[in-house]
Image (cartoon, rainbow, N blue to C red; front, top):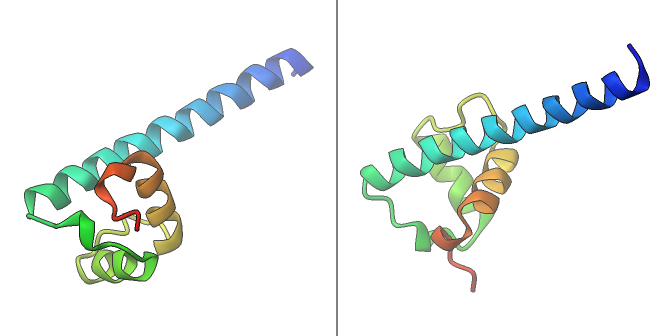
Length: 81
């Protein structure tokens, strides 16, 4: 594989990972919203992770990564105090 092909491959791989994370976070926010979750109560990472753990929402990710990905994708749903 040439350096240019490798760069294209790496770029596509990164784009695919971003799309996967977006789709996963969108699914999770829809699921939680449908269940009536009040996102403003998540003033701490521990609260979010505890709720996700109690409701089997990790979807194969570790709690810290899930929290960071989800908060990055939907910051308006979290208490920013």
